[in-house]
Amino acid sequence: MENKLSKADRTRQYIIETTAGIFNTKGYAGTSMSDITDATGLTKGAVYGNFGNKEEVALAVFDHNSGKVSSLIQQRIQAAKSYHDKLMVYAQVYDQFTRSSFPVGGCPILNTAVEADDTNSLLKERAANAIKRWRKNVQDLIQAGVDAGEFKEGLDQSRIALSIIALVEGGIMISKVTNSQACLDKIMVTIEGMITEMKA
Image (cartoon, rainbow, N blue to C red; front, top):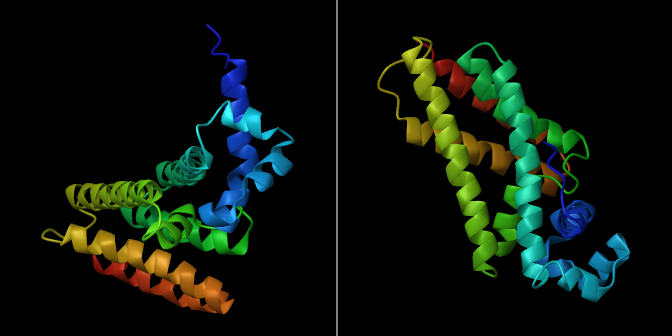
């Protein structure tokens, strides 16, 4: 049975995909309704016929952008053989974001968290939930590595997971603001060292 999207769903998806890079680059506050209508070629009424307001578009765009990142990470994790390599996927994928244009505008979690921490509680909550999922995924990989005998017993999994996330996101921020890939490269070496130290 074919799963065909309705015209309304296709229009919503078109708006999300077309504005994904704009919101991720300019932010929620910096993206105007004119940006949305110019990019999509739709009228303001057509946009508001599919979304209640600009914030709803921004939330859907965040889910879209972070979902694309998550899908790429999960594909690479499944392909990696060891738990060391599976954990390194996070560092490698985010490192590649700074070298390419995917996703347009960079890391959606970092961008949204920095902009929304004091200004938009719904976007802040989306970013917070994305970090919680990321933390749980890293902890699950560490535990699986322990169960497989690859990592040591008694690791502080929560601390390690949060440290990896902080290093990745902090590395991206430093690299972006200084225009220096070398800064991020050094931080990636630190992450690799942390993961290697966990080995049994």
